[in-house]
Amino acid sequence: MSRRGALGAAGAVAAAAAVTPLAAAVSGDEPAGEENSGSERKERAFPATRAKLADDATRPVSADFPITYVGLGWRGPHRGAQIRFTLPDGRKSDWQRVTAGCAGGREGSAGGAVTALAAAPDATGYELRLPDGVTEVRAMALDTVHGPRRTTKVPAERKRMRGLTYLTRADWGADESLRFLPDGTENTPTAFYPAQVMTVHHTATVNDDPDPAATVRAVYEQHAVANDWGDIGYHFLIDEAGRIYEGRWSGEDALPAHDSDGKLVTAFHTAGYNSGNLGVALLGDFVEREPTAEARASLVALLAVYAAYQGLDPRADVTFVNPVDGVTKDTALLSGHQDWLTTECPGGVLHRDLPALREDVAAATGRMQKRS
Image 1 (cartoon, rainbow, N blue to C red):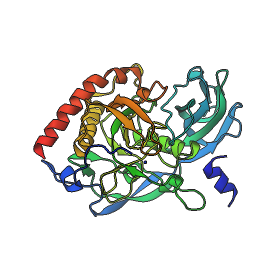
Image 2: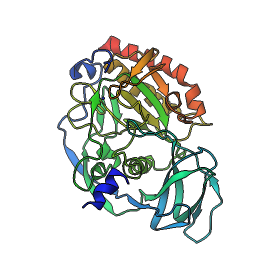
Image 3: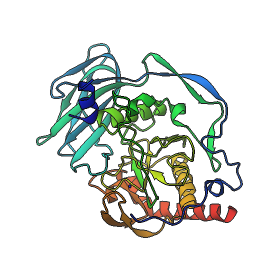
């Protein structure tokens, strides 16, 4: 039983280059615009996420709300899973392939885990076909679009980090209660370590996404609750329009993903290699398709901001040392998820672009350092 379920039933060694002070990190041609500068806030309403965890995912599942996503997880083969939906008029959709997503996890998580997030057409139910050898199946129907409205405070103006605008957790509708267990404690309390490396992911969700913020909320629900990680697995996400979304919670007194000393919050994107590893995910599936120019430009800019802030060389090869357990791995400082674990993430097309991405991020980092 998960930590969340159990409590419910019962009622980060080697540092990276020296971190510059926060003021220096956000100085330059643009105003500082730190994530929390005391600016005014306004109220905004978001649809509350509705979720139903299947009791038995091997049998047809129905829900009493329109299903916009089905979050899946299992152990076993990555390929061969299929899903079909019961449409609002009662018809069955065609069987469609389930694309294995980006299986991260907490430090020390066992290997072999597969996750997926399948878009559903406001379905009333779904059925799964799973390949032989699959175990520990879990499935969660999600609605991140049509639920009752939940009002929250959002920044009155878009936040910036060294000139880059981004959506705070409040801006994309994060329900902060998902980070907590029934007894009121954080499911996975924040821990901070010096940054060493940066890893690129894709979410393996739909391309040409009509509502990327709703997709981010679905990823959050799946990671925090269904996977029992206590939060979204990435530090940042980027949609096809180039909008940057703040991911893993890190507090309110520093740049997103960091504490006031410049240390990186541990997220859940490369199980066993999380602490000191910045994870950025592009929304979409890049096995066969290129990211949009806008998404790639934002990825370059975001990675450059953090490389400049942390004094990292995006073209370097390094030995990563996990500060939690001392595990080491020789790796490119800027890598893809599949360079750490057995996965197709961040997709073949995006992974093949990594050499060019390193050069572009290094060039942008150099320009930032000259201006500072």
